[in-house]
Length: 212
Image 1: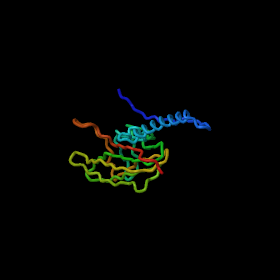
Image 2 (image 1 turned 60 degrees about the vertical axis):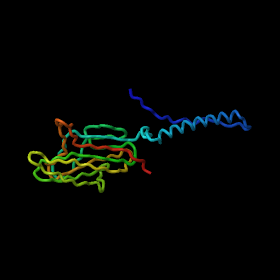
Image 3 (image 1 turned 180 degrees about the horizontal axis):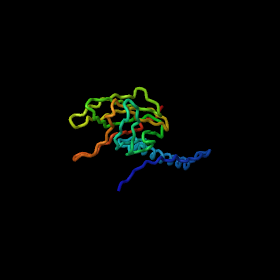
Image 4 (image 1 turned 90 degrees about the vertical axis):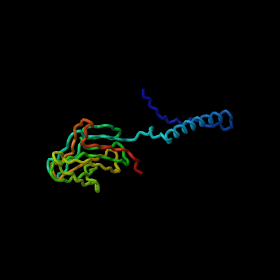
């Protein structure tokens, strides 16, 4: 049986108003209530900022993947990368198959990896970039060379990098790509005898900080 420990915020004591004349009993009651409150507050802060305090933090996160091979119907034409599986989602979700959407504003760490495959007999190029709310993000494009096939085996490589992004509530980001050859795909591979299947695309998003 798994047990989840939760922190409770202590309620401030209701001290009321002191009488005009000093009363020891009133002083002791007020002092006792404050004592209990500060002990509870100290316990909460100690748990939160202790060596394992991060287990109490509930921050937005999301992890998504695609189990489908993604193709380019035409060369040098932009296509949005898509996802068909949600692994984890807390305040971050995929909308319309491609839009990774955040509920809260903040700084986010976005990471992705794509498994590229090339059936051509020569190397081909791919370009990958980010759009935020449908607009290209300046400086986000990566250029990648996908190796040619060798013998009967297609050329392949896995590409990944990450970005820090400042987003507002309900903003969304997308990964876009284009290639010089339609022989290049974002490939999903079946499991082998000794290894599991390969997702064509994986992306994760984590909340890092609020925006000051």
